[in-house]
Image (cartoon, rainbow, N blue to C red; front, side, top):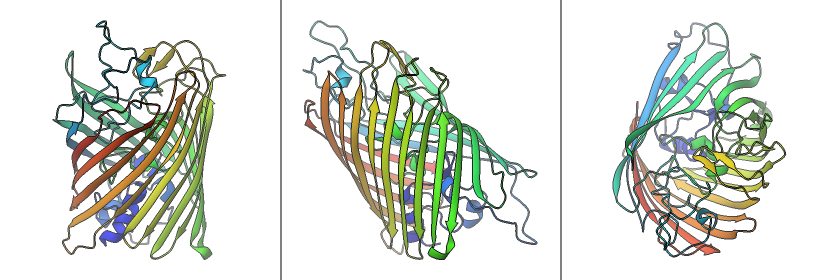
Length: 455
């Protein structure tokens, strides 16, 4: 299995069924690269479902229950106090005038800090829930156990059913002491009801269907370390039902696909909208239509996404959120190019809002749009099983809370991914965050690293 072929899948974001990241036997990811045998034993991804008759005299099936996982350990240092908040900025709410998601330190999208600090009167500056999770390290360099992940997958031998659960433990030292958050990232059942069709129906808590960035949510499948500035809108897991269908056009080496979901909270990350219950009783509907061309040395995948439904930080079913997006991936000769455009519109709702971080004072109309673009190239070095992949990503985001602030920021991310065998990835990354318009300039660049052990 060549490293160039492996990079093609890795750079795209590792495809999933209902959020379960997997690798194909014929096209395994380079970070980490599964052996052909191991790849054949994992579940097929949403965009790569292959329903086939077993070969006559085939070897016995794999064990019905498979347990896998990974450990992601990092070391990070953010400039300043680890936030995007300027010490002299007294606007209120403080998080509405900056991008608090910018100084990310890991694949979870956690930032170095979200501490708003205190005003001249000695009281904490006011924030209103437009916040990510925090690693709590501020501007102090620190080792982090980013994630300890355990996956359980059961495949029925009698019927075409798979059950998957992903649990993650996140240890953090808070001001109140040492804590470890246990987070149920995914828990769903999937059935493929038609043997001759690439159709899968999933019920439970699963990955997003919007765009492509959700495909490499997990540290052991991501080329880089940190998510984009748009991941907060498109990569959240939620509870509901989804269906994936793909139609192969074999004469022209192409396929068309449709991924549709109805969930409690749509695709926002849980720090912005919790998914464990619906606050309105009306699901959020999201869908992606995709086209792919698969040639021997070239692969092209494009898609368009949309989402519509009530905000799940409100109990008013008339307060809507609408998202549109377009994405593309190209793989050729060891080079991968990928990118996405996202547009978000949230209507103003009731005075209070409930997010995954707690209850906050008020809501506002919110608009955001922008894009990210990434390039990665696996160097053709004869040093197997070592794989060396430099990468870079550029992104630009405009956001506006109506009656508060309109801001434009961008970020340049550069890094190096070194994979060793099937079970070890070492990554280093530098994030250059810039406030272009509307937000105060602040030192919030980040140097971060990640060592991912897969088992």
